[in-house]
Amino acid sequence: MRVWSRFEWQQQSRLLDERERLQRQRAELRTAATSRRGYEPHDVTDDEATIQADAIEGRLAAVNKTLERIDAGNHGRCVACGSQITEEWLEALPAAPLCRSCVV
Ligand SMILES: [Zn+2]
Image (cartoon, rainbow, N blue to C red):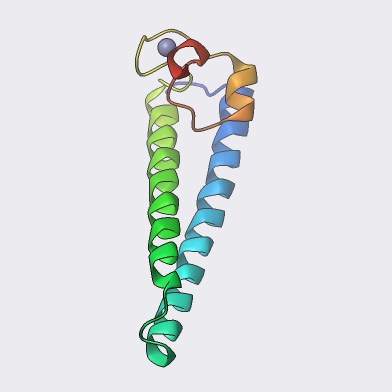
């Protein structure tokens, strides 16, 4: 079995925290949407809530993918060019799938 580096453990715990936070936000949004629907059926902010919920879904998916990559031992490898993403970059964006040069 592969031994994880300290950095991988750190990143995993940050990502798990992030996932928990996002799941909580998603649950809050759903509760808010449900209660609004009950009292004010034509509330215009429903669209905003949908956009927000989509953004949360997107980030959750990115976090889950990154956790899978850590499991597979591919964490920190740019999905576009295959080069190693610097630890500084990953510290800033733990779920970054791309290296700095592929982002721009
Ligand atoms: Zn790259």
